[in-house]
Image 1 (cartoon, rainbow over the protein chains, first blue to last red):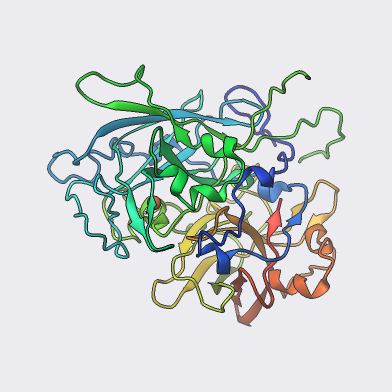
Image 2: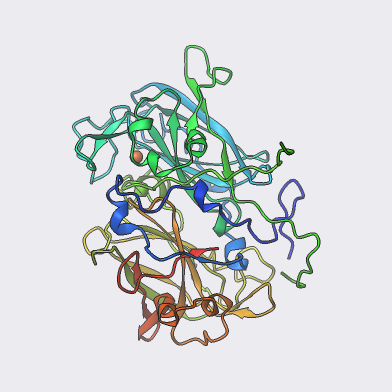
Length: 250
Length: 199
Ligand SMILES: [Fe+2]
């Protein structure tokens, strides 16, 4: 079975084991919901198998023309969503620093007032009739993606007595194998709420948290239209297996 | 000092939060019309070969409460053990499904075909299984686990063999409740905590 990326790189081979200390801790009493929802026993560590090394693929035919334009994709009459217009863009790479082409990227976010269009969100800020809050796209041959959206507002949430989420956009990325699956959040440069957020603080390695903070990118901003923020994403890579015997057909 | 490596570090995870449905299954979340339909509504299309099965369960926290906000993704091969895209794979089996806990009961349902065994790099065969990935508010990095089946031969499965505490193997095995019907609960913590995988 052949499974090659557009670069001619093999998509075979075991996944590089996750560096768990570079991820958030599962249990963090400052993020109260993690207390009853975090496993107590150690994870079972094992080298990946074909079940993790394969994964769903989605074609560009999945996408509608406005899927990556959250300013317009919920509007019934073409009126734009309210808020500070931004371009969110970046690349999806793997740990071997290779682009991950043709992979699905999905985002969701609150509106400019910090309110989600969700039955469970009853925050005081009003819904925007022209803003749904979800978008999706597929990376190009170099792993690039972009979304046009509005900057989401910060919002309060029930945790400690007065906790607020920094402005953030939720991101889901598939990669090419089920073991690469990742959901994370993008924060915005300069937001003072990042350092007060117990969810951001579940990441104990400061340099790793910094990687979730998107810098303002004036080179991609469009005069009189939108600002830009750059957000690169790194997924697990494949371990090189040059000197290992491989079973025929795997 | 040493030379620097050319490799990158994986982007850290963050919780999917309580509104993951907006981004991943917007029609389910009450945002119809953004996309024609939610992604991964079913892992099979009409005509899929093999036995159609339904797996029902709940994601249960350390207090015994079934989560109402969990979202799960599943990935599996066809009835012959071939994954979508591999030579000879059943074109009616995409193998991928997204499903959520019911907002009132917390129950989830997965209707699919029973997967076939898949070879392991060691040359052994893996017993039939479905890979799961569970996300929700309070889960800071998605949890991986597997569904095996009590009416299959799981004796030589390389992953199940690695579980030292043998009673814990049972947490990965779906119990048959009827013809083509199985029950599989995912316990995040507490008694009979599910075995989660770093794989
Ligand atoms: Fe959020």
